[in-house]
Amino acid sequence: MKKISILIFALVAILGVQSAKAWGGFGHGAITYITEQHLTPTAKAECRRYLNHTLPWHASWMDHWRAVPPYQKLDKLHSFTATADGDVNWDSGKGKAVNLVKKTIKKLENDKYKSLPDSVVRYNLLVLIHALPDIHCPVHVSFSKKEFPQYKYTIRKNGKKLKMHKFWDASPGFTREGWTYEKYAAEVDNLKRGAVKKIVKKGNIDYWTRDIVKQAHRIYDITTPNIDVAKMSDKKKKEVTDLADEQVLKAAYRLAYVLNGIFK
Amino acid sequence: MKKILLFSAFVLSVLTANAWAISSEEAAVILATRNICPKAQKFVKKYLGKTFDDDIRYIYSKEARQIVPHNREIHYLHLDKNLQPMNVGKNDAYVAIEKAMEVVRAYKSHSKIVVTRALRTVICLMVDIHHIANIRIENIPHSQRDFSYKYHSTEVGKKKDKLEEANWSKLGKNCGGYPRGFSGEWRAYDMTIYLGDRFAEYSKGTLKDWAADNGAIAARYLAIYKPNAVVSCLDHKYTDPVTYDLMVKASCRLAALLNGIFK
Image 1: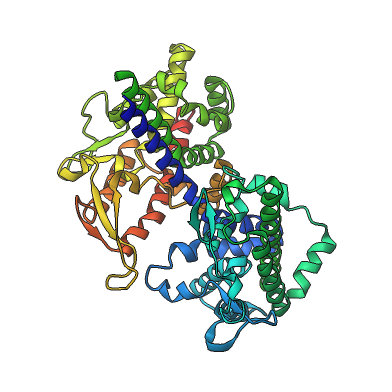
Image 2: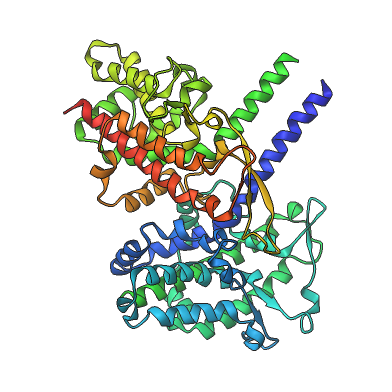
């Protein structure tokens, strides 16, 4: 009798954990949902024409297809390495994700997309709607072990080791289980025009990356070594979601700026 | 002991149901409502008591499961080797839809509760017969029951490649791998964009034609997916767009059935 009860609870616990795993795509979906709300009618219509779906539908495609040919070459293009000065480390190809974003925009901007086959435009748009948000994730900025040895640590969840990457990747959904993108956007997408302008900074990607690196340093002050994320105080939890939301909004507004610029 | 087993079965069924189906099916039904004529809208509202959109949540509730005969078999579509419906008995989705549609068409001569039940059966099962794993084809023995298979996580021979285990019954049910965070409403919006102006194309034909169409798609996949088969990562990923397309077809065809009542 007791054994059966334990078995039932174990099964329920396993199924619960499996559901929680799927939060990974929430951030990407939320970013692109907010992006959609800030697209011009022309940009929205062109995105629809090339993608045949909403942006959130495609938001996680680079993660979904990264193991499958011919998209495997994109597997290493999700992050970049920062220098001690807070800039992108362009040496040995480590600025790959930023480079990918820059190159992709270049291929499409100034009406160049009009002379490309539809399938090529579609592919480049797919890259953009995943890679640009990806570089805004604080753990997608790597710091050299030599310059920042203090950043190589793990945190904990209910006493068990947890990678910083895993935790911060899912941070927009932290404390928001079961939220829809609509609910999330209603909660966080409320900046005034002036603040948005400041974030977008006329599409200056070098400014964006320096800002992203600065933000990436902050996570190490919030989630210190061995902190147990399951036992965080409400204040600490808010620090996590505030930083995550800030990055989500920046990624969303910047992506909208880029798409509106391409499809003028 | 019996009580514990029943309780555990209940807990598992609730968790499984929540895990995949509701919002995909909800989306299909919401999209169907966008494509039904005003008379059908009025009819649905009258018999379901509230808006069509709200009612889909009721359809999957415990209460509704007691009204609509939710035994396992009724969700399956049985086809012969020529992909024609087999009418294997009252517990077949095709037969159940036809019978329920007879009641719905003759709604004036039935009581409200009988029409309501029939309408709910049609809605639920029209979506169900568009899941490839719910299709059982006479000359394909492994389609008769669920089975497990393995798939490569990446290209064969790559360092990261792992063999993952999966079940046929789950294959067609994730509606193309929607990320969490999509509400039913937003999924339906996404489906509307995907559908474009193809409603007439997707809803063309009869229930019999649709069953054969779904059967042909299922047969193509059943040629690759077999018990203990090892499937490439490409085959595995490329089922997503197909299952998505089927869900959109389900909503168009459901709308066409309901529109047909008022022609």
